[in-house]
Length: 506
Ligand code: SF4
Image 1 (cartoon, rainbow, N blue to C red):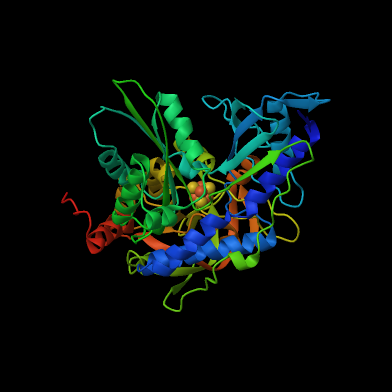
Image 2: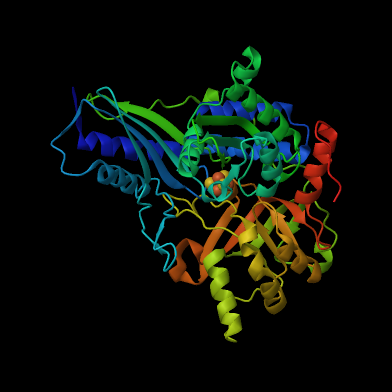
């Protein structure tokens, strides 16, 4: 029998969320370091260098790896012989109190991304509560916790299928991963749940992502059962798709594939797949009554010796004087260093702008000839100008793009991952351009922002319109003014170069 104190659980939850906001797991960093060494695609190698450099900066500066500091997901295994010493709250309330303390920590305030009334008002709870919690009652006298902060961009790419028992899981995964685009910020991991029922497969896929990256050890010793064979086969074949870091084409799309399985009905083969992104954030601890969890501080030597610096081959752009003619000379895959003033805006600002345009109202800012950055930054702390400020998924803005380009004279956009057909058509029609920044390099990007002020929709908080003044902010031309998308061309090119999976003609 052990007695667990309420405060020990609350403190452990708060400490672990602060910890994972700025420390990548060591296994992820080391796997990404190996991927960097092996990567042959210059664009993907540059993106991995940004993620690694960002990671070390966050570890040193104790600031979030990504501006999306995630939805808290907790797996709790409560020993049947545990007693809660003088508890005044239920365990769920204790965990949510820990989340609240972590996200409101004054020295490293994390972005509150959780909205209540999801199908209605979508009102921010302001402290990132509640967490999503899964409980299991197990023999023993400890409380074991796996805790993660899962980014929305990768969570949104979750897939589920009820296959026929005779269908191939490998075929489904290889058909489905390219459809996920790059909004899940690869290189990351795939968590796959096979069997059980629909909801059981989903929970297993999420829980699988809590495991350590060890595919290299598995390949070295050889698979010993069907699940291990499947892991190796999927790891090799998904990487042979050539998607690469940030979808820029390359060798490293996944650093591991994790699988959990469970007995299922004779008529069913449920399969769930959840990706984990460049901001892979999770930690594990056990409470045994002796006090709060002690989390080991990683050593800086654990990070690979990789430091991203602006490439001498990159083109410097002055946003204060850039013209449509200059934009038309940019080629897909070209790297640019942006300098000067840009505006920001994401989902809520776009919705409001379009509503105002439809009513014939004047927008708070003149967008003519300007660039907009799709971002929702973390609040600044200490002497920062802005908190981590990486790009958000651009496809969510596709449905607004035609109207915004047509009616405001906006010149270009900056975001994360690919554009969809509606966005690309609008870019081509208006001779615009779409640039992508690296998802998962938010703190590194924020260091390029030298001034920031709110210029519209201040009530939207992190979703308002800011004006940033940037110096050498690194981006890649993802859709040029002719509508050619690097996310469509580069993975095919790398799939052909890798040569293990034939490229289908469309
Ligand atoms: S790395 Fe990408 S998917 Fe992950 S939290 Fe950040 S923006 Fe979202």
